[in-house]
Image 1: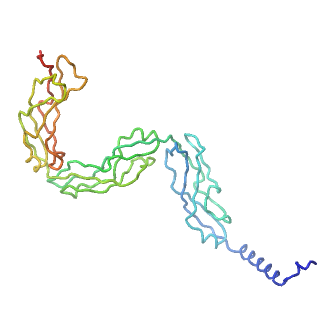
Image 2: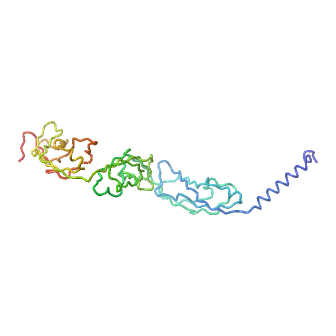
Amino acid sequence: MPEGVTANWPLKLLALALAIGIWAWVSGEARMVRQFDVPLDVVVNADHVLGTPPPSTILVRLSGPETMMRRLGPAMSMALDLTGADIGRQEILLVPDDLVGAPSGALVELIEPGRLTVVLEPRAEAELPIEPTFLGQPPEGFAFYGATVRPDRVTVEGPDVLVSVMASVPTSPIRLDRHESSFEVIARVLPDQSTVHSLNPRPVQVSVEIDAAPIERSFGGIPVRIRGGNNLYRLQNSRANVTVSGPPSVIDLLDRDQIVLYVQPSDGVPTTGSVALPIEVEWLLDEEQGANRLSVKKLQPREATLLLKGETQI
């Protein structure tokens, strides 16, 4: 027998005995069954999105040696690769190979659900205005006069069939019933479709205008002016009466000289004959004085007749 085989034979015999003992201990160890809710990760093409939200987790039942099963942690996930799938409805069978992070000695006994139905849609992207959402009304004696949002727009992505018909994106609800003065609040942007997501999901700041309940004040015989028109026109009815609504503190600041009534001819106004144009209203107050809290309750007349200079209305 070669000398290398017989050298240190007591140590080699001991190593063999230890190996056999470890194998016997592992193979004879009790097996354990455990269930896990593992996250589902779905990957699609850059120009596709999921038309319906899939389940966020998948139930997986695993069995294996007890020591191995006790060490299993949250690192597992179900990975579903749909980068090669076409637009439309897809039936997907989940198999053990989709489970990522499980040790090689674990046996997958159950995947629930074992089959998924997903719908792939063309992806669309749009920049939309943010519309604050309000709950309730201010306490008695006070009123809501508007709000501004900063930033006031957000870019969203989702199925084209949904994004293409969206006019705005709402915020998380903002309560008004606890406020007797203006306030600022941080709100989240919440697209109202589960498959539409913000590309820059950061909070926004909403400035809410609350003031005393409005009162009204009427002003008569306010001149109506012409803006633009290259001095080609004149007005037949050049004065109007206006009733203004707003908080008492702002109404008290307002006088007739701070009310501007005007009509603005456009390119479509005829150069002969006459045309009735809506009378527009502007305040010679700034926002700090509360101009944004004023509104027109009544305007009489609501239109002014525009005539080309040198002509009279028949």
